[in-house]
Length: 354
Image (cartoon, rainbow, N blue to C red):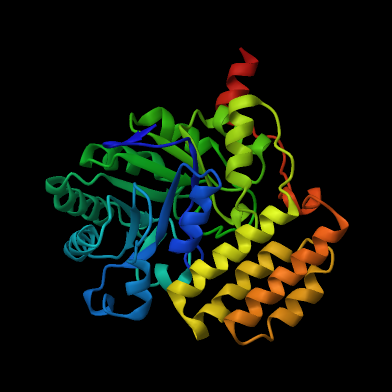
């Protein structure tokens, strides 16, 4: 699968997640089989570009191509400027955020709130494409199925965005109104795929290799995008990629491998955030890794009291050493995220009835 001039390693992608998909996490996901990973969203407000948060999000040191940066905002000219700002700092693909359901984003009419104003949304896409085109930088976009159940307008927007020059569309199978509640639906993603010629990526509730295969079959999408299921289980990318290629499952990862991966991830994390912010922001990642493991909750409670990186790093190593003394591999319940029901779309039901 290609995005512009970039050929991707596979069709299993890491979804952009604010506060999660920073440079260390993206590098980890790519190492563990993700064919593509998009950054956390970067604001289009120039007055915030010098902030520590934005400077960290714009840091791509050691990151392999293609470097994809997601931008968020509400004004076409500012979004175009934000695209150029990030291109100057190494972005090779610009992704437009029209999928974030967070109130603090939507209240400013950014993220998925833009789907309510189709004219504004299209003007933003046109401005960003015009800014990126002279630099040979493809523009992609992530959106939801619509603002609410009564206004699922992803198909009409997808057609307009394709005509404006967007090179790939990722669709989360929920409306903004749903947030992350309820179940993702895939009929709308299938309809988007049928309506456009650019690659379409399916996102939402893809937690197992079997679910990834079912979603691809049901939607005819070109790729799947994994978000929350990768938190604490970044090896899910290689598991899905292997299953899609072979129809067989990989063994759960070795405890020793997970120990090494997490400790390396922490070192990379500390190098980006520094001592104080590093130890605090690493807690969520460590918590995700250990929450389903024997003794994980008790360890998490103790670990959250540690205030320096060296002690935190050593405590994680000790935890996995103790776990490895009792088992070679990560327990299956922790290695595999919980599955969901089999996927069917209206298209599948119509085919079955013929």
